[in-house]
Image (cartoon, rainbow, N blue to C red; front, side, top):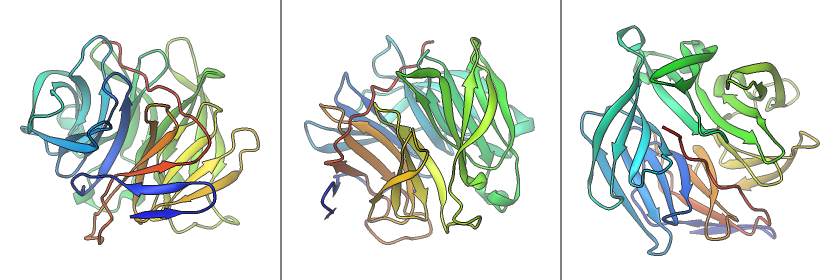
Length: 310
């Protein structure tokens, strides 16, 4: 399946349809795109050279919400598993991944939430957020989630009263101490300054998705940025990825995706100039919902994704 306009092309990649595809991470070392299916749950790897996707389960996991590469440890990944953060091992081909150790556990008091999006900052630090379990009611009506920074086995709270903790990216190489963040229910992209310890301060609204003050009919989900600092925001319910210009803070391109529930985005490919897009088939959406897509012809490059320093 291909859709196009004068500036870009969208192609569906081979692989299993996901229930809730999320968290794409490009690994330069293996020329692979790693991502997760939160609800199956599974970790997946799209092998660029083979044009094939491998998938693995993780015993005991009710959800796997994000995946991060680990510096100096090939075949090791940090994942958001249920309401804890764990280190796992996977060879990228077999049908099972294995636990190595638990890095942090939110414990029984947070059994009503699960981790959602998580990313590694330019300093090798993990930031990850939570959301209330979908089975417990309207996600947009509550604010049980939090955003954390991982340090030395503990999750340090950075922001509270979050509904659905989502997209994360940093303004590098220009200002690696500026972070962008999405709480889906807030309908905006927030910007923060990051202090020397990694704590967030000076929260502001960078981009508001509301149209003339009203709900646009979709919500922001995952996010990345290109080498020029422009933002790319996946839209749950919007069938598109929004490109937000860093300088003007305005929408400059809508990348149409043939799936309504667009969940996240990441740049990759041999030249770092291809945008990978995950989607969801949740709610029995028809194919190609839940597929992994690749967007080419955007005329921009992304930045290498960072590995977690353990």
